[in-house]
Image (cartoon, rainbow, N blue to C red; front, side, top):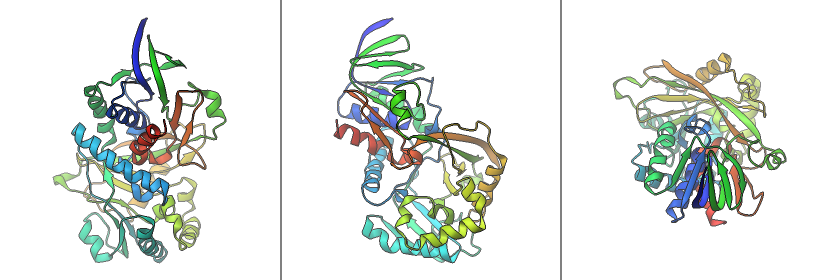
Length: 376
């Protein structure tokens, strides 16, 4: 067994939240070791849209955190020479109650810190060639959203960290933390501090903390098309009426309850499976479509064809793409707290747990990492 390995700080977890913490720590000049139990990260961090989506965060602290995270994302992506699409986002609407929410949000949004505006039908179509024209009423335009390919990010960001001197230990599960000693794989490390970003693993480290935390799991199903032919571009990432009842930012709208009631009445299957259709595109041209939400600590390992069909049905109400040929289907699982935007704990001196940003892990990861080090 190797001994006398030394770092200022250990990061446990090689998903995007762990990578972001390692990035911020190394930027501040700390020596860092990052442990990931698998040969490569395989969890929710590579199974999502790749959307950095500030417009979805509730006004105030979380929205500001998302904006800070966005700036850090751009710096990291440029430094790692990773492609991204700074195409902004459109929430398109086709029903009067959807338009009421969208218009209200555009009226109150700037006062709450959002950079958004209402677009007429004609202006939406000028922004995007991917929006279906039938019954289109308009939409919310926001310029601040980015799209990355999460698979590329999780594969290539570690290369940047390694260039910065971060010690990467993939395929090395942390068995115990008793500071200053960490035992992982066949090695023993001496560190001053440790940050645990363990995703939906509630059992390996500090299980009592997680047992009392209130955390649960969320499973989502997603699909990805083949690369679109002829270099076709989606343009802005797209969402529609179902999304207005999903993200907390829109709860500021007094017109929202009417929309929520109508959706529950007309399409209860969308509420049953937590479906709201989002669409993004990778730099390689594939279109990612999702998603659904099933909550509970025991995740069904089998995907449901019914859910995929519903996602595609809802996407087809507003999306017009050259090829609907599906190349991949998958599900992801993330941890989530029913009442908090993320979960933090300090189980022992020198150790901090940071996890469960829910479905906002890509959006908040770098901002949360900076926040962690500002508080330590």
